[in-house]
Image (cartoon, rainbow, N blue to C red; front, side, top):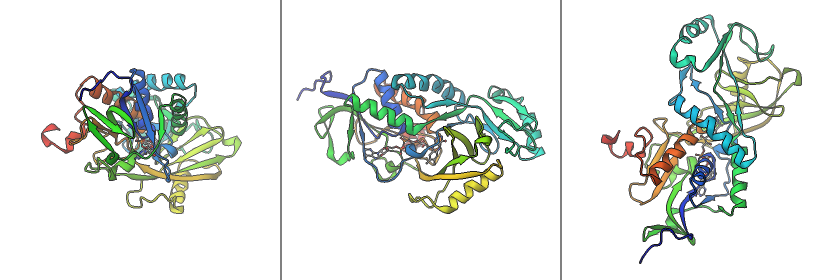
Length: 363
Ligand SMILES: Cc1cc2nc3c(=O)[nH]c(=O)nc-3n(C[C@H](O)[C@H](O)[C@H](O)COP(=O)(O)OP(=O)(O)OC[C@H]3O[C@@H](n4cnc5c(N)ncnc54)[C@H](O)[C@@H]3O)c2cc1C
């Protein structure tokens, strides 16, 4: 049988999952003029994109290292999100200063020495003496570090606005995609009356039980709190050390987040709430009221790098996953990267290509 690949009835791609990965990928595909439909399941449990704080932090960890590919990722997302906001006429990208108070004189000294390093100097705005830039409640007896280039993406707002856009364009289908109901024939995938050249699955943590279950996922549960603080202690920017605390929407603060590897249930545990409030007390002394406690699974991977690539047995069946705890900074750059691999036949960066687990010579 002959295939008509230019037929308007054949999609370029069917994208499965409308979390952050699926939405960013679909928007990037639309920008290329590709024909697509996104399939989103009604999920019983909260997904990562529904609860995430969306922080983008170029300098992370106890040792304050520059995050992997910071320069490429952050310069990409600075263009990407404002254009996406404009298309959806919705605000969800918030560049903000990040303040990291030092916990000792030793850390202060280490940081003063380290801040001169070229690779960090682009991101450090200033090293402050104890100045309490976020109000009297901040515990910064040893001063702190003010970082630029970061901020947060309101991921639930982004996905909601983009799903509405897809719905209005009749490009959103509510269904639970099961690859057993799809078949590849004459160069096309067929699924429930839809014909498409490519299928790209963006199913987050659920993927560990699905078509790409052979990959080393290492999902991590995260708990997060919505907090109200007293009006006279409100502050701008992001407070960060052993977690973070910041104003997310008017007078609502986010406090997070935990990293739990064993209990992967969807139940928010009181111990997690206590832990987060305990961490906050080492950072900030104001009074807080917990409004909401949520949790979900981050689609993290064993080597902490995303998973991109082609299924080893299924033709034109691709994966975009493994965004872990850094979805907002990773998704824009790697969505474009994957589309270039699929539609321009570019090579996938070996550090994110899922082939690294299939063929050791390919690393
Ligand atoms: C508590 C917490 C805090 C976080 N904080 C941050 C942060 O500060 N900064 C940051 O960058 N990241 C953060 N993250 C991580 C971020 O949430 C993830 O990196 C990102 O949201 C992952 O998006 P995803 O689309 O890959 O997965 P998901 O959000 O899990 O989305 C997958 C989607 O696929 C759908 N789906 C699954 N199976 C099917 C199917 N068979 N058919 C159709 N649809 C299907 C699901 O319903 C879901 O909508 C946090 C996560 C948590 C849990």
